[in-house]
Length: 127
View 1 (cartoon, rainbow, N blue to C red):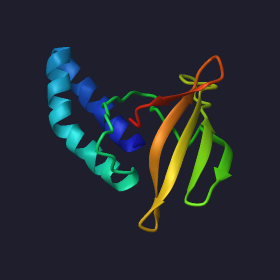
View 2: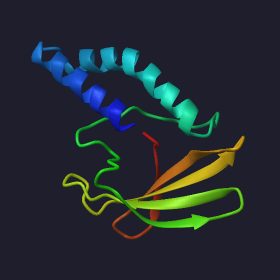
View 3: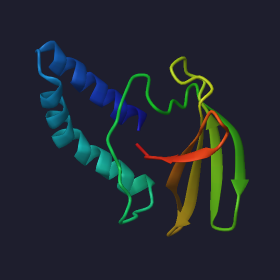
């Protein structure tokens, strides 16, 4: 995912240097990068028919394995949850919970929640 986000950021910056409008940037990225994102989601997430996913990217990336920290995990029979705290300067202190399921002998992400300022978990898009 980190590589995908940085690719989008690079393409976005290159197009903007050529005075491409925001709408044109979005249309070009949507056409090329949405296919790449779909492949990532097919491999690493559950395939739910009612899942609505958007496409967002940024630098720093949403998840950075170099700075983010695994702070807790809970094992269940066919699933487990991990909680990650962001230590990047952009998202410092943000806490995210991922639910993973065992599907056909491999672990895939089923849902993502972000902790609100009031301490509740709010379901958010995987991307």
